[in-house]
Length: 182
Image 1: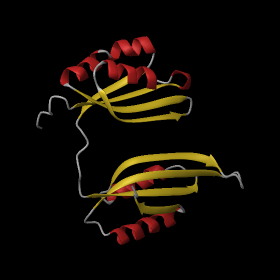
Image 2: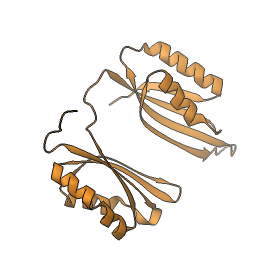
Image 3: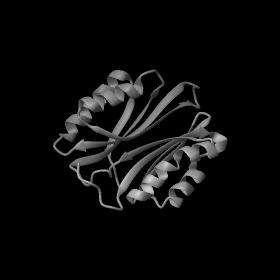
Image 4: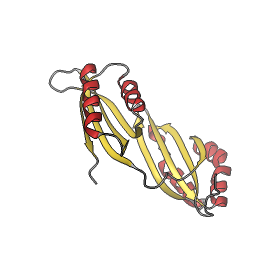
């Protein structure tokens, strides 16, 4: 693996904390103080907790400074961190961006079955967001998911769409698959 440019060292930072103790402000402050730049971030409340995933970038010494400050940050803020050196996301590829939306009566295993379908097709899941809700009209427990995927350009989209919708019909999932519109 080639050595990254001097100012392009990446680190993945994850944090989980109670809802009343969001790690967003103290962690973004610490990243900035160390001389790193925030490249990408996801902040979500799940149950009684906040989950935060961030990709930071900086010079080798700025990233090392962030790593070295982690245990003190955890102790001072009471927030558990995970740090992992990584590389930049690869540039343009031959993957076509598509979004999938699924709604169904909630039942165990839906996310696994969706992930397995796309894995078997050689399709990368770029992001996934799912949740449960109660239908207003009937009170039934419902499941919804939004999935962004990268479909290899050589894939015949109409065939894939037919296979996916047949898969969803067999599981009684209502789904759509559309290209991402920027």
